[in-house]
Amino acid sequence: MYNNKVELIGYYGSDLTHAQSAWTSTSRDLTEDKLNRVDKLLKMLAENGHHTPFEKSSLHFLVTCDQASHIHLLKHRVGVSVNAASLRYREFKDDKFYVPEDWPDTFQQDLIEFTEQANEFYHTYLDILIPVVGRKRAKESARFFKTMNSQITMDVMFNWRSFYHFLNLRNKPDAQLEIREIAQNMLSLVKGIEGNPFEHTIKAFNV
Image (cartoon, rainbow, N blue to C red):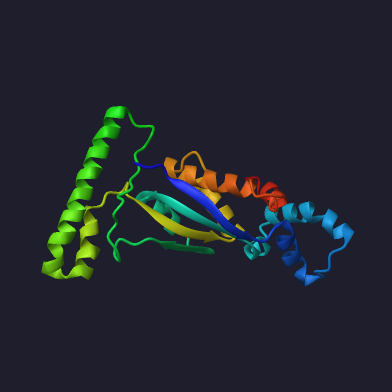
């Protein structure tokens, strides 16, 4: 049993990257006056829906999460790149799975036992199916025994515009708890980047 996990593995850009993109129509040359106006410019762009300059950055995460959260992330396809470990191509040996911490202990135990049994079926039938349907098809179809709380690792990259869209939907009280916690962890990691390169962008979008 494992918690869902988020790691920021890289980023590109900053408040200045967004501002310079917006200044392409006039002059990208930086003056002291322009540098002093970056925060006001980004706020104006965000408030008026001029979000194209915010596509010029990238935020790169490694996410280990349950299958339900994986589906939530896959729904964000514009400006988002997702590549996940696949049960179709290899057998999963570690059988990571997630159990909701807000469930009563007895319910958690029931889910643990159910998941462990399903994992046993997965490995057993993978071996049984190989001589029947071939190794490729066996790996493809044995995964149907895997439960929705099975965890996989995903490589996820947003530009800032798509990241804001993700936060606007998933970092909300009515979002599913698991994906909301992933969104909150992602935002916390971005806010914690040394030097705070997205400080004014974060304030402009009020996230």
